[in-house]
Length: 150
Image (tube, rainbow, N blue to C red):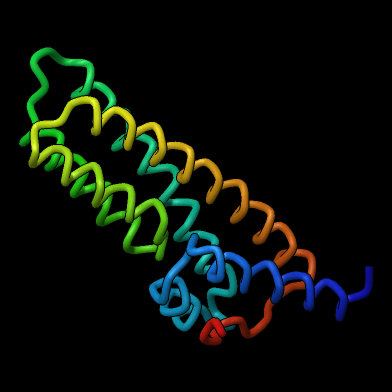
C-alpha cells in the first residue's frame, strides 16, 4: 500500500471513530498538542490512559464485589475513571460512566452491574480500534491530523 492510500485509510478510520461516537473534541485537542518535538504525543497519552485505567477498573470491580455495595465509594471511583476517559476524548466510555453514576445515585445494584459490563465492552472496543489506528499512523510517519471531524 502506498503512502497516499495509507493516509486515506488513517483519515477514514479517524473520522469513523468520531462518527461512531467513540471519540469527541478532546481527542482533537490532544492532537493539537502534538508537534515535531513529540510526534507520538497522542499515542503516548492514550497508552498511559490504558495502563492507568486498568487499576481504576479493578478498584471499581472490587468495590462492586463487596456486600453491601458502597454506592458513594463506587460513584467516587467511577468519577475518577470518567475523568481519565474525558482526558482522551473517550466519549462512549464516558457516557457509560455517566449512566453508572446515575445507577449509583439511585442505589441500583443491578443497573450498576449491567452498565459496568457495557462500559468494559466499550473500553475494550475503543482500545482495539485505537491500537489499529495508531499502528497505521506509525506506518506513514508524522502527519498533521488535528482537524475537526466532519
